[in-house]
Image (cartoon, rainbow, N blue to C red; front, side):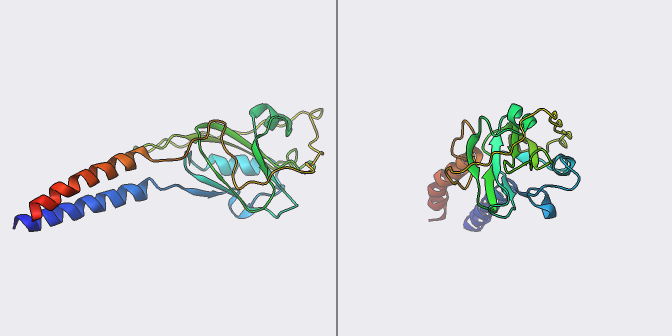
Length: 200
């Protein structure tokens, strides 16, 4: 009878771990949903409205769906975002579509297309990334990027060369790991010999 109870307890713990992993799983966000990463017809509001309806957490993935040689993705600081400038890039430009970006740090993050006047015409994205938590987060407040002034940099210079990459690292990028999952896995592994000792 004691063995039966221990088996039940063991399976309950395993299922709890599986459930925790499932709820802590990353979310894949396709930028613009069906619109993709293009010059939107209604300007910058297309991507600001899209972002306002999402919650971005560290570990989530942004998928920029675009045609290679027609668009690109570059993460930039806010000042460069506001001016549609590729000055001070954060990480490498993504030139092969579709491109995935793993969100590695919290805070505001800004992405633009550097081809022609695409950024000025609205092909840019501003998001706020939060730390994951076990409690539900409040809905994000919508943020609308400011429109650049007519005298701002026109983004007409397309890069002629540069490295290609599969993701844009955050300035302080560290390997993404789930500490709660690691602690739980360690706990389960340490309990396993005790469990086995009770059965045999």
